[in-house]
Image (cartoon, rainbow, N blue to C red; front, side, top):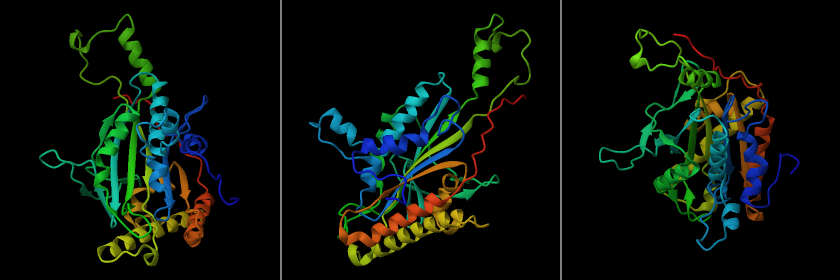
Length: 343
């Protein structure tokens, strides 16, 4: 326990309140999370069957369960989404918009789970990951759906979870064979621009551009919204073939899962040791998460470990990755530029 920040043995709500909320909340002095300066990532890591999906998504409580019981079993994703929209509700109207995208990394390939075919049916499309000229990672042609509430987010996620790759093993009958990445992209308008817009609309000289006697040939003032990401990641579990008993095509799935998790560990190790080269491109997973692992971001790793003696080796490996993550020392985040631009 001494090597980790906190150990949770209670409800899902306890884990989120103690750890997840601090990653996206704001304070009275300045923005400190997903609505402010930098990106936020919450990921669940651990061996297969250790409870990662339960931690991130929660359990499907029976209808007869009390409201208190259902609230206690909500996962980090629905709780983080609810917190995000609660914070947005406290901001000026129309100051923030939110879009959701859902991807999976399966066999070291990125798939857009919200993409649709010509008939409008959901069909996961393969996507590429590129590095932009500014050094950030980007997925061209990725599908983004606008959302206005946490219930919208969960409705979209629930509708496409069945498309995620699964395979029964001796360890877990519903073992996920891919990494699931849910991204909430928050577009924020400058508070100065909002105040200026209100002045122009309500001031005594306010006038519709269409009725202006001398319309200007150029835009007087325009603002470029700045964007931050809240990424919620349910990693596939590390797996020992001898225990899981998989054969055939599932062996390749295990190989890809373990190699991508090893690449994640290597990236965290390189960041912790402040090496000049960080091997983000050794895996599609680390390339995709480059901005939230090593950029201007908050990273929260939830380690899921099995309580049984049988899996003590795998549990120690998970704790080892957590130790590497804690050793990463990031520079203070650079505040994103949200000033007005005059054209």
